[in-house]
Image (cartoon, rainbow, N blue to C red; front, side, top):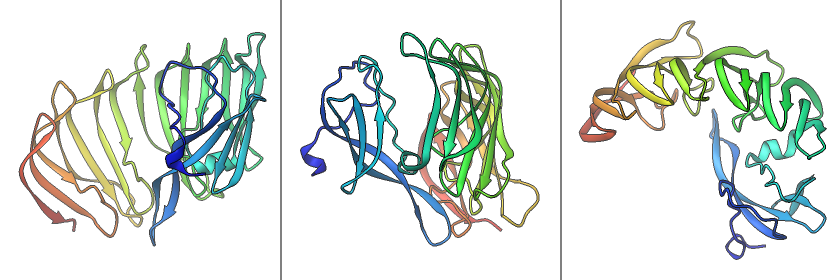
Length: 277
């Protein structure tokens, strides 16, 4: 099969009708760049079959087959290639084929004590969540409470490297009643791991960053994070004014900061790069 000959599956399109055929998915996988794991964009196929199945196909191999109970409901399509191979959920369905009761996640057929409860198809109560950043040797969990399918109150971000290690808290914050980030948060760098221990600390208002934010970093030998940069966000949640930022490819080998000025989220003029001490 050729990717150019198949239509793309519109994951975010709210309009849904089951149409048998083969579709292209824009997915992600891991690759190792000599010293750290990084996400990599890639493509694979899914097939919607007459037997109400979703088949995941990569490089000619069927990786997974999911049975769909109700083709009138849009299936949840996975994009993480490692999760397609190793993640499985088990739970119950109600009379209307909605998820109910306790659901548990299995990773490589082992119960990780991850999951929570559904009520009328919506997550409710205390949950341990998995998102797309759960890999083989780089794993994140999100723990907190749901109400009517929305996150609320305090949530914590848990992290571990390598499956034999224990999870520990590394970030988190609060969600308001609308399920949006609000108040003080600790966010992680998108490539957070042993060679890129970078966190961001500041305040959210209705999912928008506002006011002063700090960028903190520590090497894998350090005990504590130290402030290496930061700046301010305006009322629209965009960087504004003087900033000490980090370069896009920041890691242990490329630990450079850049100093300059933003105006409503856009960099103005030249930024001066400096290597961290």
